[in-house]
Image (cartoon, rainbow, N blue to C red; front, top):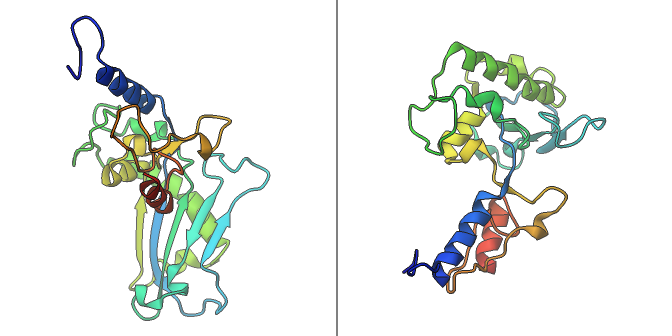
Length: 223
Protein backbone atom coordinates (compact mmCIF):
# COMPACT_ATOMS: atom_id res chain seq x y z
CA UNK A 1 0.00 0.00 0.00
CA UNK A 2 3.04 2.27 0.31
CA UNK A 3 3.35 2.14 -3.47
CA UNK A 4 -0.12 1.72 -4.94
CA UNK A 5 -3.61 1.17 -3.66
CA UNK A 6 -5.61 -0.39 -6.44
CA UNK A 7 -5.62 2.07 -9.32
CA UNK A 8 -5.25 5.12 -7.10
CA UNK A 9 -1.93 6.27 -5.75
CA UNK A 10 -1.88 6.07 -1.96
CA UNK A 11 -1.20 9.09 0.22
CA UNK A 12 2.17 7.69 1.28
CA UNK A 13 3.17 6.84 -2.30
CA UNK A 14 2.31 10.36 -3.42
CA UNK A 15 4.43 11.81 -0.62
CA UNK A 16 7.37 9.53 -1.48
CA UNK A 17 7.09 10.49 -5.15
CA UNK A 18 7.14 14.17 -4.22
CA UNK A 19 10.30 13.73 -2.14
CA UNK A 20 11.99 11.79 -4.95
CA UNK A 21 11.05 14.43 -7.52
CA UNK A 22 12.37 17.18 -5.27
CA UNK A 23 15.69 15.31 -4.90
CA UNK A 24 16.04 14.58 -8.61
CA UNK A 25 15.38 18.19 -9.58
CA UNK A 26 17.76 19.70 -7.02
CA UNK A 27 20.57 21.83 -8.44
CA UNK A 28 24.18 20.80 -7.74
CA UNK A 29 27.31 22.83 -7.21
CA UNK A 30 30.42 22.15 -9.25
CA UNK A 31 33.31 20.00 -8.11
CA UNK A 32 36.81 20.73 -6.79
CA UNK A 33 40.51 20.51 -7.39
CA UNK A 34 42.37 20.10 -4.10
CA UNK A 35 46.03 20.26 -3.12
CA UNK A 36 47.32 19.28 0.30
CA UNK A 37 50.88 20.25 1.18
CA UNK A 38 53.38 19.79 3.93
CA UNK A 39 56.26 22.25 3.45
CA UNK A 40 59.20 23.62 5.47
CA UNK A 41 58.23 26.71 7.42
CA UNK A 42 61.73 28.17 7.75
CA UNK A 43 62.02 31.68 6.35
CA UNK A 44 58.30 32.34 6.03
CA UNK A 45 56.98 35.60 7.51
CA UNK A 46 55.96 35.55 11.17
CA UNK A 47 52.78 37.42 10.26
CA UNK A 48 51.66 34.94 7.59
CA UNK A 49 47.85 34.71 7.68
CA UNK A 50 45.95 31.45 7.96
CA UNK A 51 43.10 32.09 5.51
CA UNK A 52 43.36 33.47 1.98
CA UNK A 53 41.04 33.91 -1.00
CA UNK A 54 42.72 34.39 -4.36
CA UNK A 55 40.62 35.48 -7.33
CA UNK A 56 40.49 37.70 -10.38
CA UNK A 57 37.98 40.45 -9.57
CA UNK A 58 37.42 41.09 -13.28
CA UNK A 59 35.77 37.68 -13.62
CA UNK A 60 32.67 36.27 -11.96
CA UNK A 61 33.47 34.70 -8.60
CA UNK A 62 31.85 31.47 -9.83
CA UNK A 63 33.91 31.29 -13.04
CA UNK A 64 35.82 28.05 -13.48
CA UNK A 65 38.97 27.99 -11.32
CA UNK A 66 38.69 31.71 -10.57
CA UNK A 67 38.36 31.52 -6.79
CA UNK A 68 40.99 29.55 -4.86
CA UNK A 69 40.61 29.18 -1.11
CA UNK A 70 43.77 28.59 0.93
CA UNK A 71 44.09 27.51 4.55
CA UNK A 72 47.29 27.16 6.61
CA UNK A 73 45.98 25.76 9.92
CA UNK A 74 49.44 25.36 11.47
CA UNK A 75 49.46 29.16 11.83
CA UNK A 76 47.05 28.62 14.72
CA UNK A 77 48.13 25.16 15.84
CA UNK A 78 51.74 24.14 15.06
CA UNK A 79 51.05 20.70 16.53
CA UNK A 80 49.18 19.79 13.33
CA UNK A 81 52.54 19.20 11.58
CA UNK A 82 56.04 18.04 12.53
CA UNK A 83 58.33 20.70 13.96
CA UNK A 84 59.43 23.16 11.31
CA UNK A 85 56.64 22.42 8.85
CA UNK A 86 53.35 23.98 7.76
CA UNK A 87 50.36 22.12 6.36
CA UNK A 88 48.40 23.84 3.59
CA UNK A 89 45.11 23.08 1.88
CA UNK A 90 44.06 24.90 -1.28
CA UNK A 91 41.05 24.24 -3.48
CA UNK A 92 39.00 25.67 -6.29
CA UNK A 93 35.67 26.62 -4.76
CA UNK A 94 33.14 24.24 -6.32
CA UNK A 95 33.89 25.63 -9.77
CA UNK A 96 35.23 22.55 -11.56
CA UNK A 97 33.25 21.24 -14.52
CA UNK A 98 32.78 17.50 -14.02
CA UNK A 99 32.30 16.99 -17.76
CA UNK A 100 36.06 17.50 -18.16
CA UNK A 101 36.59 14.35 -16.09
CA UNK A 102 33.59 12.15 -16.79
CA UNK A 103 35.16 10.41 -19.79
CA UNK A 104 37.91 9.15 -17.46
CA UNK A 105 35.34 6.97 -15.69
CA UNK A 106 34.91 3.37 -16.75
CA UNK A 107 31.99 3.57 -19.17
CA UNK A 108 32.47 7.32 -19.62
CA UNK A 109 29.48 8.33 -17.52
CA UNK A 110 28.71 8.71 -13.82
CA UNK A 111 26.22 5.97 -13.01
CA UNK A 112 26.01 7.03 -9.37
CA UNK A 113 28.06 4.09 -8.08
CA UNK A 114 31.53 4.77 -6.70
CA UNK A 115 33.54 1.59 -7.02
CA UNK A 116 37.20 1.19 -6.12
CA UNK A 117 38.32 0.77 -9.73
CA UNK A 118 35.81 2.91 -11.57
CA UNK A 119 38.44 5.16 -13.13
CA UNK A 120 41.95 4.56 -14.35
CA UNK A 121 45.04 6.65 -13.71
CA UNK A 122 45.88 6.86 -17.40
CA UNK A 123 48.28 9.33 -18.96
CA UNK A 124 45.40 11.51 -20.14
CA UNK A 125 44.04 11.55 -16.57
CA UNK A 126 47.43 12.48 -15.14
CA UNK A 127 47.96 15.16 -17.80
CA UNK A 128 44.57 16.73 -17.04
CA UNK A 129 45.30 16.53 -13.31
CA UNK A 130 48.57 18.41 -13.80
CA UNK A 131 46.93 20.99 -16.05
CA UNK A 132 44.11 21.68 -13.60
CA UNK A 133 46.47 21.84 -10.60
CA UNK A 134 48.33 24.78 -12.12
CA UNK A 135 45.64 27.25 -11.00
CA UNK A 136 46.23 26.13 -7.41
CA UNK A 137 49.99 26.54 -7.66
CA UNK A 138 49.62 30.02 -9.16
CA UNK A 139 47.30 31.06 -6.33
CA UNK A 140 49.65 29.64 -3.71
CA UNK A 141 52.57 31.55 -5.25
CA UNK A 142 50.71 34.77 -4.54
CA UNK A 143 51.04 33.90 -0.84
CA UNK A 144 54.33 31.95 -0.72
CA UNK A 145 56.32 32.80 -3.88
CA UNK A 146 58.81 29.93 -3.52
CA UNK A 147 56.21 27.29 -2.62
CA UNK A 148 57.06 24.98 -5.53
CA UNK A 149 60.69 24.84 -4.43
CA UNK A 150 59.64 24.23 -0.82
CA UNK A 151 57.35 21.41 -1.97
CA UNK A 152 60.39 19.62 -3.44
CA UNK A 153 62.49 19.80 -0.26
CA UNK A 154 63.14 16.77 1.90
CA UNK A 155 60.21 15.92 4.15
CA UNK A 156 57.67 17.80 2.05
CA UNK A 157 54.40 16.24 0.97
CA UNK A 158 52.21 17.03 -2.07
CA UNK A 159 48.85 15.34 -2.56
CA UNK A 160 46.45 16.43 -5.32
CA UNK A 161 42.77 15.52 -5.49
CA UNK A 162 40.58 15.83 -8.58
CA UNK A 163 36.80 15.80 -9.02
CA UNK A 164 37.09 12.03 -9.45
CA UNK A 165 38.92 11.80 -6.10
CA UNK A 166 36.19 13.93 -4.53
CA UNK A 167 33.53 11.71 -6.08
CA UNK A 168 35.13 8.47 -4.93
CA UNK A 169 36.12 9.22 -1.35
CA UNK A 170 33.23 11.52 -0.45
CA UNK A 171 30.68 9.40 -2.36
CA UNK A 172 29.47 12.44 -4.26
CA UNK A 173 27.57 12.11 -7.52
CA UNK A 174 29.58 13.88 -10.25
CA UNK A 175 32.02 15.04 -7.58
CA UNK A 176 29.66 17.79 -6.44
CA UNK A 177 30.25 19.74 -3.25
CA UNK A 178 26.55 19.46 -2.61
CA UNK A 179 23.15 20.92 -3.44
CA UNK A 180 22.73 24.50 -4.60
CA UNK A 181 19.74 26.84 -4.51
CA UNK A 182 17.85 27.20 -7.80
CA UNK A 183 19.32 29.75 -10.18
CA UNK A 184 18.56 33.29 -9.07
CA UNK A 185 17.66 32.22 -5.54
CA UNK A 186 19.59 31.78 -2.30
CA UNK A 187 19.90 29.29 0.56
CA UNK A 188 16.60 30.47 2.03
CA UNK A 189 14.94 28.61 -0.85
CA UNK A 190 16.43 25.23 0.15
CA UNK A 191 13.99 22.63 1.52
CA UNK A 192 13.18 22.75 5.21
CA UNK A 193 13.37 19.85 7.66
CA UNK A 194 9.70 19.08 7.13
CA UNK A 195 8.77 16.55 4.44
CA UNK A 196 5.43 15.52 2.90
CA UNK A 197 5.75 12.22 4.80
CA UNK A 198 4.22 12.56 8.25
CA UNK A 199 6.73 11.86 11.00
CA UNK A 200 9.74 12.00 8.65
CA UNK A 201 12.12 14.93 9.08
CA UNK A 202 15.09 15.65 6.84
CA UNK A 203 18.49 17.05 7.68
CA UNK A 204 21.85 17.33 5.96
CA UNK A 205 23.25 19.53 3.22
CA UNK A 206 20.17 19.09 1.04
CA UNK A 207 18.21 21.16 3.57
CA UNK A 208 18.42 24.72 4.81
CA UNK A 209 20.97 26.19 5.52
CA UNK A 210 22.91 24.03 3.08
CA UNK A 211 26.41 22.75 2.45
CA UNK A 212 29.34 22.64 4.83
CA UNK A 213 29.77 21.19 8.31
CA UNK A 214 28.18 24.18 10.12
CA UNK A 215 25.20 24.10 7.75
CA UNK A 216 24.67 20.37 8.20
CA UNK A 217 24.92 20.66 11.98
CA UNK A 218 22.43 23.52 11.96
CA UNK A 219 19.99 21.51 9.82
CA UNK A 220 20.09 18.73 12.40
CA UNK A 221 19.37 21.21 15.16
CA UNK A 222 16.45 22.61 13.18
CA UNK A 223 15.03 19.13 12.54
